[in-house]
Amino acid sequence: MPAKTYGITCTKGGVGKTTTTANTGALLADMGQRVLLIDADPQQSLSRLYQLQQKANFGLTQLYRNANAEGCISKTVYSNLDIVINDDPGGDSGAISTFLRESITHFQHLFYAIEGIRNQYDYILIDTQGAKGIIQETVIFAADVLLSPVQPKVLDGREFIHGTVTLINKFKPRPGFTSITGRALPPVKVLFSQWDRNSDSESVSRYLRAEFDKEVDGQVTVLNTIIPRLKVYAESSLGTPVHRLEQTRPGSTLPALQTMLDLIYELEPKLIGIEPEWNGMNAKRVQGEATNV
Image (cartoon, rainbow, N blue to C red; front, side):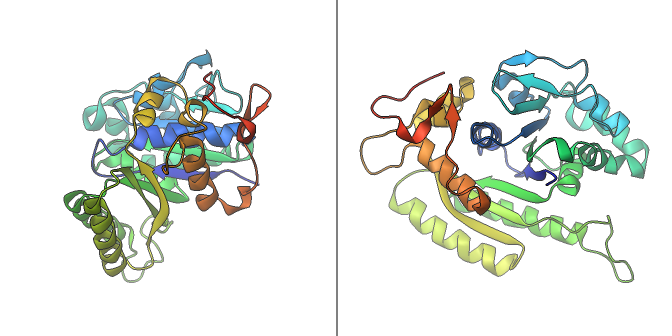
């Protein structure tokens, strides 16, 4: 089957989009899925996260210009995990944004580049910038699903709701048109991230779930899986996927391996029962201390 494309989006920075993209992609790869990461964030954090085994001659700029991924895909040191490096740090004033503004058809180039490689992968995950912009809109146009990490804070939630409603209205077809872009806005999956286990987070979570249902009914789903605020998730930004860093944890909080597996299983129920393996080892059989790469 052709790859399913996830756009990791949120209009606010610092909510864990890059680590969510990287950790989700790496776990899918260890579950035997063919995965491509695309770094569409001008900060280029995803591009620097995982060590490369083979760097491509080109990156995101060439992919956009040619509407083709040939020569733009680098291989990481992890099996089944490839990446398109972001080589344009300019953001809204950079080469890609300038190119996109030259022609309305350029808006579709990312979509067509992905269409050309869908049969080479099972999942494609695209990291985005923490702000609205033309590059983010091309990602939304190309994605099958939007995965949106949100901190369980009222202000963050309200900002996300406002941004989502704005996007829905922007992608909504005008009278007489079936679709203004040819594609509807993809479904949005909200992931509560950087969760503190306290009463405030619980109450804010209930409030935001109600607000999401009221404001964007049918378009947004709040996931049951929650990513806690733990040191191990921050440590994963140093280059080792979080599920490899922590398979067990004392106390009631789930270890990172189980939390990330829960996220995968909730997003992709067809993968339920598939266990990740690396270095010839079945992760669910690991006992005692976490085994690092």
